Amino acid sequence: MNASDLTEDQHDCLQELINVAMGQASDQLARYLDTFVYLKVPSIEQVRSEHLFDSLNHDLKAMAIVSQGFFGYEGIRGEALLMYQPLDSNRLADLLGYEADELSFDEQIIDLSSILTTTFLNVFARQIDNQMSYSAPRLLSTNLNKVNEHLQQQSFNWDYALKVKISYQVTDYSFNCDMVLLIPEEAIINIKTVIDRILADF
Image (cartoon, rainbow, N blue to C red; front, top):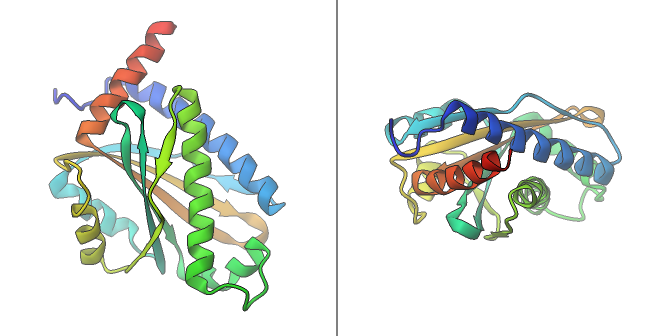
């Protein structure tokens, strides 16, 4: 077993932490947008570096991608990718309550991405007695090579990565967005330590 592999109990605990954070974040987002936010069951998988970008290629059928780094205590860190579908671009202004020409599309997509990323991760961090800091969100090219280049520029060890995928659907606007969290190998080991501490309390 690789040092970064999750046991069944660790996986189940992480799944529950994500479910709680996702539920609270979607509730907060729904209140902010004054509409219902539908969530699919999140997926958690561990991927090797040689498969990571192939896995992302499967997800990158997107019109816009925003990336934002996150950093917590005890070496918990990673990168969040927010992926938006092509048909959603004309719904952003309505979704965020802006006039059509108030902000550029790039500004709108970055605004929404920051809300989604920080809301989810702040709730997740509170559950594990942690606190997150964030880099500025960055709009990326949808070209897979450009996304790969961006990720490889991070100061992470990508031999392994934990990939968490969460899908949001805002029903009143027929709006869909996927959030993919990528947690590098070194941070997975740190998360396992935190999870073991939680499990020991039970």
